[in-house]
Image (cartoon, rainbow, N blue to C red):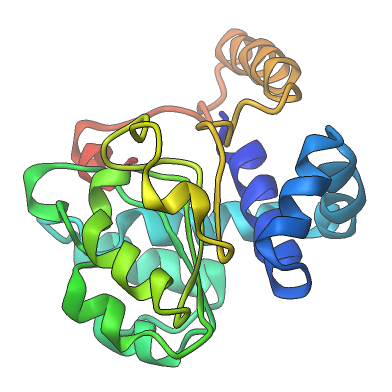
Length: 216
């Protein structure tokens, strides 16, 4: 149930990174919740669509691929399903959402990071192992890419790591989904699920074994 707060953080970081350089973004973050209150409110009405989109991206390229799941998710999210390489070539902002089995380690490696457009923004609030850290350092150190990383590999990064000092990189301490509003969401969701059980209605949060490969 922390998907909604995570989506909110991602949208806030995406939006802020487009208009603020990382040093200015760091200053805003140090002021507390102002960034989330100011930026996220504008997206409150599209929370359901963002959640659907997150489900789609979470399942993306995580072996084994369940094509039935993807076919069902795409119309709901109103997005076009493309191969990952093509997605990277087209995108100005890429946000990563996937689990981290061995098959997805360094999903974004040197080659795929090289497919991103100059000036593209890469946001990772999922698992640090999905991105080749050394390759990302090279692309960001050259000034070609910007990165906002809520997760890293290793986590935490050692003191003095280059990503901390690069002006086009923002590293946050794994706070996606833990911004304070998720506790009330969890409680309300749990109560609503109990009410659905008592009324004999289907559960919203029920997870089938076949879905586990799609969940981050």
